[in-house]
Structures are given as C-alpha cells and as structure tokens.
Image (tube, rainbow, N blue to C red; front, side, top):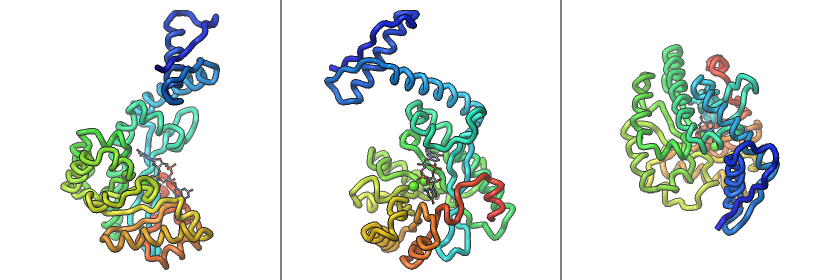
Length: 303
Ligand code: C2E
Ligand code: CA
Ligand code: CA
C-alpha cells in the first residue's frame, strides 16, 4: 500500500484541498517505489502549481497555435547539398519567449497534448517543404523529417492523419520521414510492425532516432523496415577523444551501409568531427557545425 499524508494548514479552504494534497503525496510515494509513505510538503506544492500553470499555458498554446517548427538542415557528407531538414518544435510563449522542447515536452506527453502539437508541426513543416520545392527547382529531392512521440505512435489514426497531411500539403510520402526511437518501437513491437507497414504504403520513410542508446537488440532491424539510422549525439561528441565511441560510430555506419540503410550523424559540432565522419563514410551530417535549428526564413536563405 502507498500512503500520502497531508497535514491541515490554515490556507486550506475546503476539505478537497486536503484531499488533493494527500493525493499528490500519494503519487510521490508510488513514484518512490511501492509500500511507502510520503508527506506533502512545500516543494510538492510548488511542483504541483508549476505543473498546473504549465498545463493551462499548454492548452492555451495549442489552441492559439503557439507551437511552431524550427528547421535544422541535414547535408550530404560531401558538403555539397542540403538533403533535407528536421523540424524541431519551439514554443513561442507570449510571456516567456521562445522555449525549447526540454521545457515542455514531458508535461505535454503526460497530458496527451503532444499529439496535437506534433500534428501541427508536421502540417506546417510539410506545407513549408512544398513551398520550398516549388520555389527552388534544384531542391526537388529535399525531404522533411518530423519527430513522433510514443503517445502519437500508438494513436490508431496516426496513418490516416499523415495521409491527410500529405494530401493537404501536396507532397509525396517519399519526401517525408518520421523519426522514432528504438524504445518506441520495442514498447509495443506488434503494433509498431503494423504501423510501419502502413506508413510504408504511403511511401513515408522511417528513421531510428538516437540509434544505439535505446535498445540492445539488433533483431528489430530485420523485423522492421527502416530506412535511416541516426547516430546519437553522445557517440559523435566523444568520437575524437574516445576510441570506443569512434568504433561505435564506425560500426553503425558499416551496419547501415551493409543493410542498405542510410546513416546520419547527429550533433556534429566541429570541422574535425565532420572530416572524421566523411572518412568513415557516413551518408549525411546534421549539427551546429552546419547550422542550429533556425526559423523558416533562415532555412530559406540557406537553400
Ligand atoms: P532529437 O530528435 O534527438 O533532436 C536533436 C536535438 O539536438 C535538438 O534539440 C537539436 O537542436 C539538438 N542539436 C542539433 N545539433 C546539435 C549539435 O551540434 N550539438 C548539440 N549539443 N545539440 C544539437 P531540441 O530541438 O531541443 O529537441 C530536443 C528533443 O525534443 C528532440 O531530440 C526530440 O526528441 C524532441 N522534439 C523536438 N521537436 C519535437 C516535435 O515536434 N515532436 C516531438 N514529439 N518531439 C520533438
Ligand atoms: Ca529527431
Ligand atoms: Ca536524436
């Protein structure tokens, strides 16, 4: 049994206040492992208020479309061409300015609001891609990658939604990639298999995000049809001074090539990293060395 304890204090106006705080403490007790007790305290109150405020803000933000994508270019390893962009959400908060995903994604997932946010980001990114393709004929092969959260991935209407977004924006499925992590696939492998198969029917590409950090079985590479492996930042950032990280990067590049998949190195920050990755034969490069995620007009200038 998990027990949450709240002690009456004069700020409580109604019995429900006391119950609410005991409930919050009970969740804390559960989170600490079962068979525990927790006493409601000031820190829990602050956390609860912050979460509540964030929740209200998030709901308003979704309604007012305050969530917009920034775009980070992904270039070919020869450095000659922009292969595509990854859309990364930013929150244009009316009071707090521009907020990165780390400040709101976790709560948005807990509240189920991430689904609406991701849908909106995908919509806007696809429309943007369509506009760029129309404006620049030599960029006709440009692609757009969007991130899919685990809660969106289990939505039964993910595929119809993607289909609609493709039709509304008028781009081919082959120009769109969805990025999922290994753990999202493995949490519900049977469902994932069906989902990927349906996405494949729309010709949408599948990338494994943060490859090498989530799940230790390689069997899923055979089971699922995957196009791209994105080598995690943690390996790339250490590869020049840590032999093991360098070997892991090299091995992922080979693995991708031998399985007929594309490799992308994430988080490339320096010229030396870029050159080392070129020598290893990685296909595509993404990172601050090329450009951070930027608003649409900046991305257009790059094109
Ligand atoms: P991610 O998908 O792994 O995205 C890469 C993150 O690394 C981005 O952080 C990007 O700004 C950052 N990054 C890019 N190049 C470099 C570099 O050279 N050095 C370093 N240190 N960092 C670099 P960001 O934009 O803050 O996004 C964080 C995470 O939030 C993303 O990780 C992704 O998991 C999630 N996310 C972002 N946008 C969305 C979205 O629209 N929907 C969902 N569901 N998740 C999103
Ligand atoms: Ca990603
Ligand atoms: Ca990543």
